[in-house]
Structure formats: structure tokens, C-alpha cells
Length: 341
Length: 273
Ligand SMILES: Cc1cc2nc3c(=O)[nH]c(=O)nc-3n(C[C@H](O)[C@H](O)[C@H](O)COP(=O)(O)OP(=O)(O)OC[C@H]3O[C@@H](n4cnc5c(N)ncnc54)[C@H](O)[C@@H]3O)c2cc1C
Ligand code: SF4
Ligand code: SF4
Ligand code: FES
Image 1 (cartoon, rainbow over the protein chains, first blue to last red):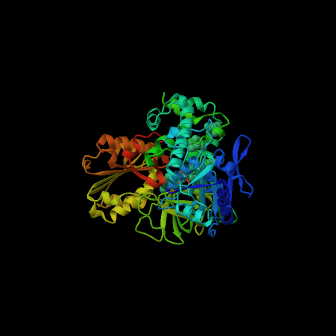
Image 2 (tube, chains in turn blue, cyan; image 1 turned 30 degrees about the vertical axis):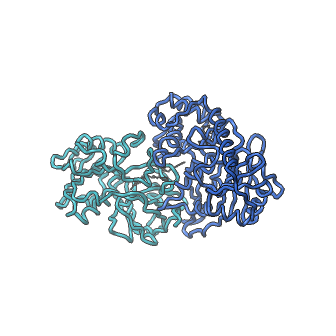
Image 3 (cartoon, rainbow over the protein chains, first blue to last red; image 1 turned 90 degrees about the horizontal axis):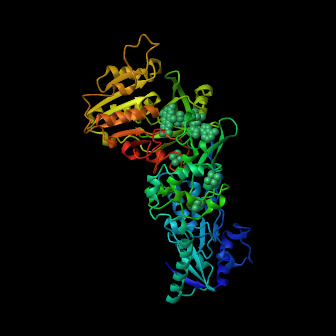
């Protein structure tokens, strides 16, 4: 992949250029969390690059929590999906997109709403320079910098320089359109970047040492279905579904119809959570997972066993959003740790 | 094509099959051709949507019949409030149906119960349309009682004809003195000394508890798990492998099923729950 060196001023030019042709969303420190906002011209580019991963899940921009997807009997018109640039999401979010694309863009019945938004989405991701105690991407086979594609441009902040990695044709085009002053990077810079990335990776690894999560965590997850940790966490869980809703590797939804006159309705696609009792309900109030412990196990098994079997990667990227979200202080790493016992 | 958009379909006939099961004949605005065993999402405007496997012949393209047991919101609304001439919505067809090509030249052994006969009737129509391609078709049907037997006309015709071997049983005939057939759950009539098990295939469709015991019976009779085709039922919403609801292990019943061989499922719990 092509890499170039630029200055902070050039990053600002890039942002302005994107803002001219699309909506531009950037992260902003807001209390303990990092939230998102619209870009303003005098926002400081290096702060944006360095900020921690935004709390909001990226999926919000591709499939909103509550979205109209059909009308009956008259068909609704095609949706508008204005160009959108997301700046400052981290590698974990680009990894989320890998799975979302896999599910939503299958050949036979692609989700046309997702597809339209995805086509018009431009992603400028950034290497992590800050690690918080909820981060554990390294424990699920990933890195705190992009390794699986799914970005258009990625920015690495190295000392007083910025390295841009181009991830797509659109990325090249955006650089040309912003007429940035791109400089070749030397082998020395390449090495320094490698070192910095290695150092951050080690920090993430080290802080997760105590959990001792097995590289092949899918094996114990499959084998230890009776692990006591599921029942133990079920005692604390309040079934709010927050862990699912905040996770961009969770794509579940249901279709809800709202009556609008005789034999007519509007249909909405609404995010759902497998932690809710009604999620798998069949006619006659039967459900295969009546106990909360079974639903917690399902969440873990889906992410670490079933998706691994389907796509050879985990349905968890270690972003830690569910840890921040949980009102019961349930840490997914403790669930994995418990499964290994 | 928007996968969530139903096609308007006029209800052209209502056929009462039994006290709890009704067949609805629909004429969609544009044909929805399906392969036998695939399913559709049927929606009652403003009430909701539910998955059903058409019970009619896949060779008939302009219309489709859906046989429905009345068990909850959508299905009871159909029974109580819907009339001929009403416009419903249909989308699909979805999923993998019965792999007829793989059945060719083989002994096809079918066991069904209750409303599970709906997909099986469609399958039987498809088999009969090309009956010489199959070695033998054996069918074992179970119903709760004589009154609960559905498709009475077809059943009578199939019993009289010699294209397939059909055997019926009812769980209990206690209040039906006229019943002179078998009594007992369907597994009691499943042993069949003439069935070619080794190179044959078996098909099961019915309520979860029946599917479970019929599958165990077939295993006991000597069928391998990959010779047993089950029509799975799980909660569904999207029908197109996205909403997550119908998952069993790594499979989505709506996408990888609803017809699935038992070897794929046997390692997962919750299969028949
Ligand atoms: C592939 C497939 C094929 C099928 N084929 C047939 C067939 O040919 N004939 C037949 O009779 N049946 C068939 N079924 C079963 C049929 O789909 C169910 O009987 C039907 O969904 C019942 O719908 P209902 O609204 O009447 O029941 P309800 O019990 O009211 O609701 C059933 C569904 O709606 C959801 N639901 C209802 N209320 C809520 C709530 N408050 N919150 C969340 N979810 C809710 C449930 O999760 C459940 O999935 C099939 C099922 C599948 C999966
Ligand atoms: S499960 Fe939690 S840590 Fe894993 S990807 Fe989802 S939100 Fe992030
Ligand atoms: S966020 Fe926590 S309390 Fe809420 S459903 Fe998830 S695990 Fe349970
Ligand atoms: S019904 Fe939505 S994934 Fe199967």
C-alpha cells in the first residue's frame, strides 16, 4: 500500500477538501468518552488524529438504529445517502466493517440501504496512540492499526509528522483532489513507524496479560458450554442489551410494521439484542434460550465460535465498547477468562 | 431489489383443512416462483409478518398456497379477520429447499406430522411430477386425531394410487369410533422393512418434538445424519441472513436452510428447542 509523509497543515487541507464534498464527522473528547461531531474549520487536526476511539459504534452510519426500509402497498422511493467522511475511527472499527460488509452485502439479497450508505462512505482511520484499559484488540488476533483493509486513508502520527497510508482508489483520488504535498517516506521513517506500532501493540498486550485469553479462544468457547461464568454473570446482567447495541460486530435487527391506514404500513428495521428474552421466541411463547445464562453464552458463542467457523475471524474486535457500556460492569474479557477455566 | 419489500398478493381462496389449520391461496401481483422447501414471508398489513413454506406445487407459478396453523398474532388474525379479496404481502422465496437432483434414483422416505405436512405436500407434488426419476417414495404421516388430518382429498387419492406408498396414523382415535387405521405417534409406523436405507434419503417435517423423535428413529433405523433432511423452524425476521434471529451455530436457517441435513446440526444444542 502506498504511504506518504505530510505535515499537520496538509491534514487540515485534506479535512477541508473532504468537508467541501461530503459531511465530515470527527471525534471530540467529551468527559470520559470520545464523542462525534461535525467538523469545523478551526478544529485542530492533530488532536483529531490522536483522540481515543469514538464511543459511538460505526454501524450507526451504515444502518441506523431505526430506519424505514419498506412501505406497503406503494413502494417507497430509493433512499438518499449523502457522501459522508468519517475521520478518526480506529482499526477496531475498520475491522467491524469487514464483518458488517460480509453480512449485509451478500450476493443474493444485499441490504440496499446499507449498500447505498457504504458506497458513499469515506473512511479516514487513525493509528491508536492512546490505549485505555478497555482495549484488547491484540487478544482477538488484531492490531491497534489497520491490518484488514476497509479504510480509504489511514493516518499515523509519528513525532511531528503524519504518515498517510492509502487503502483504496477513492483514497488516491481524495489525496489528488486535495492537492496535498505528499512526500516519499524513507526507510528510516518506515522503521520508526513499525517500532511505534510495535510499542503500542505491546502496551495493549501487556495490560491484558492477567486475562490470559487463549489465542484459540474458540476452542474453549465451543467445549466449555457449561462454564460457571455464564450463570455467574447472569446474576449481574440487567438485560439492557447495551453490549449488543454499542457493538458494530452485532448486526441483529428486527422488522417492525406500523399500520398507516387500510392494508397499508411502513416497515422499520430496528436494532435488536440477543440478550432480550423475546429475541428467539417462537409461536406459543416457546424459546430455545429461556435462561439469561443461555443468552449470554449465545452472545459469546456467536462471536467466538460460530462466526469464527463461518469467516475464520472473530465477531469481536476487542474495541471494549461493550465494557464501557455495561451498567453491571460485566467485562467480556472476564467471560472469556471464565470459559477457559 | 429491496429484500424487505413485500409484493401485494390477493387472497383468492380459503380452504379449511382442520379445526386449527387453514390453506390460503394467493395470487401475487407478479409471480413468485419457488423451489419446493423454500419459504416466503407472508405479511398481514399492519399486523405483522411470519415465515411459511408454500404447500402447493412448485410447478404452478402464478399462484401459491400456504397452509397455516393458527397459533398467535399473525396466524390468528388470518383466521379471524381475513377474507377472500383481501390483499396480503409476500416476499421471497428464501433459503434452500429440497435438493431434488440429489434425491434422483434414490428411495425417498418422508415422515411428517401436523402442519409439517405443508412443505411435504409441495415436495410430494414435485416428486409426483417426475416420479420415474425416484426409486420409491414412502410417506408416513401422523396427526393428533382423525379430524386433524389435513389435505384429506389428496391423502385419499395418494392412498388409492400406486405412485407412492402412504401410511397414516393418529396419536389417538379415542373419540372417533369410525377410525379403522393405525393408532400411535408417527414413529410407531416408521419401521419399514422394504425401505432402501443404505442409498436412500429421508425427509422430516413437523413440530419440534416430532422432528426430534423421528430423527432419532431414522438414526436407529440406520440412516446416517447426512441422509436426514430436516425442515428447521426458528424465530425469523429478515429471511435473508442478516437479522441474526434464526441462528443455529454458524448457520442461519433462513439462508443455509430451512432444509438442512442433520449432520450439520447434531453438534449444536437448541436444535429442536
Ligand atoms: C421456515 C419456516 C417455515 C414455516 N412454515 C410454516 C407453515 O408452512 N405453516 C405454518 O403453520 N407454520 C409455519 N411456520 C411457523 C410459523 O412461522 C409460526 O407459526 C408463525 O411465525 C407464528 O406467527 P404468529 O404471529 O401467529 O405467532 P406469535 O406467537 O404471535 O408470534 C410469533 C413470532 O413473532 C414474534 N413475536 C411476537 N410477539 C412478539 C413480541 N412481543 N416481541 C418480540 N417478538 C414477538 C415471535 O418472536 C415469534 O417469532 C414456519 C416457520 C419457519 C421458520
Ligand atoms: S463484543 Fe465488545 S469488545 Fe468485542 S467488538 Fe463488540 S463492543 Fe467491541
Ligand atoms: S450491557 Fe451488561 S447488563 Fe446490559 S445486556 Fe449487556 S451484559 Fe447485560
Ligand atoms: S431470519 Fe434474519 S437471519 Fe434468518
